[in-house]
Image (cartoon, rainbow, N blue to C red; front, side, top):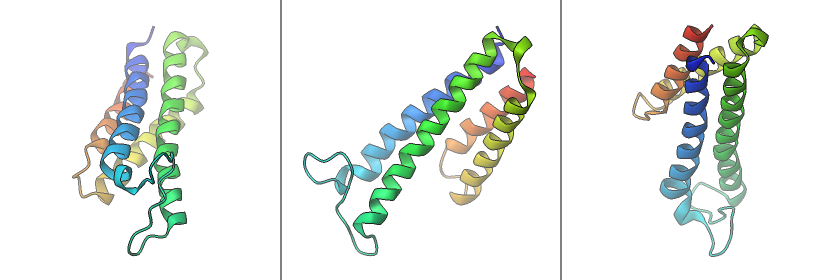
Length: 126
């Protein structure tokens, strides 16, 4: 087993879980009508449809993280069958995602650090 890929995969899954939970608690909790799953309370400058797509996109990124985590975990158990294109795509996606979060939040959101660690572990794992 390749522990670098396995650890990177677990971090992807954990990051997705934390991302969704904190987003629900810190961002969407007060924007939801009672008993509704999708937030829909519009506010100044933010229509309901915009809020709804923000919510979907927020969780979509978590789903993508879980998918990449699953791929990395699968690769960790079968490195001899590893497709280098898939691994390189994951590495570049994580590096670019890390840079986007770093620049977009001026380094104030810690997600860029975890994304960068996942990329580094994947590079070491090759």
